[in-house]
Amino acid sequence: MPTKIEILKGDITDMAVDAIVSTANTDLDLDAGVAGAIRRKGGPRIEEACNEIRPIRLGEAAVTTAGNLKAFYVIHAASMERGGQTTAQSLRLATRNSLLRAEEKTIRSLAFPAIGTGIAGFAIEECARVMLSEVLEHLKSRSSLEKIYFVLFDDAVRSVFEETYQKLAARPLSRAS
Image (cartoon, rainbow, N blue to C red; front, side):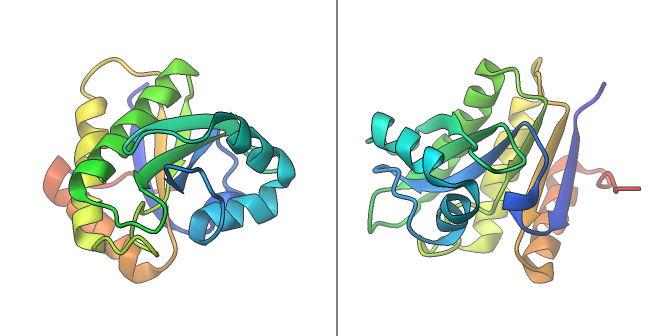
């Protein structure tokens, strides 16, 4: 089955997928943004799991339980240090390592947010280019991933990701029926 990439507006914490990716800092603090929403909705088990494995290196990704979320796992993608900014290189590595952690768990469905575009201050257009490029490159080789979602918080960000995908992939997006 070919992998399908779907870009949609929504709340990543509501996704019923094998794993969701969380924006993270190297200390795996679940304070604000996507990470804070995951902590609030997922319950204390996620934060307890983060406490056991922190810190991680910049650009690395770590897997924990998803607690009370519909997903089975949370992959924490460390694109910044605490109080720092996301860079193209740290985002590229965090995206790549999230995909590798998904492969290690033989995950079939994965949902990404727009990593680094909140408090980390990374430009949405560059985020879309970096993340989609990494995903498309990863999918050129054999993968357990059958469905990858980009779950974005508003229509404007969704449009940027859709346009970027169409330029990079030179093909139309798969649409939910």
